[in-house]
Image 1 (cartoon, rainbow, N blue to C red):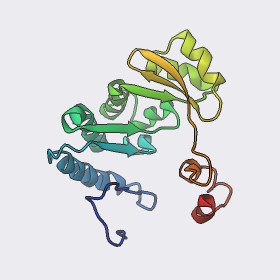
Image 2: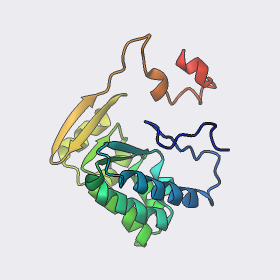
Image 3: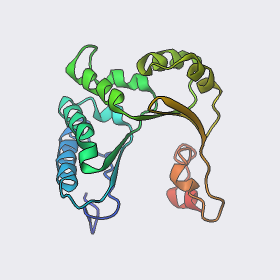
Length: 193
């Protein structure tokens, strides 16, 4: 169902695909991408941030992957910042068969990303990630040693270790980033408390 009082011109719009079937996701995302391009093309001077969580799942659709490539290429023109979130860069391989157009488009999105943020990786995953991103030895030594809430930010040709901090309670935004709550059986209201 559509959320009551839906405001597609609001300061923040979230499209949750959790209950949408896998077969319908590419169709819905094609509609969302087309709508986004219409919003971006308004020329109203507003800067926008587009975040795609679990992007590997969406990139399995060749149509959606092509739309994303176009969105990335036009981002500066529209004043848009694209953020693609994946738990493992190896998930890009799930976007399509090796050598397929879809897999190529997914990997090109990675190449188009000006900023990459990496969190702790185990040694086994590090090799594949290093190969995909062209990481040097210093990067490869740091990544397995990163602790929770610390990441290696690769910005252009420079690298920074960044420690992410939350505001102290009671104004804490911890409930926003607490991904363990659902696993522990805590409801959203309890996590916010």
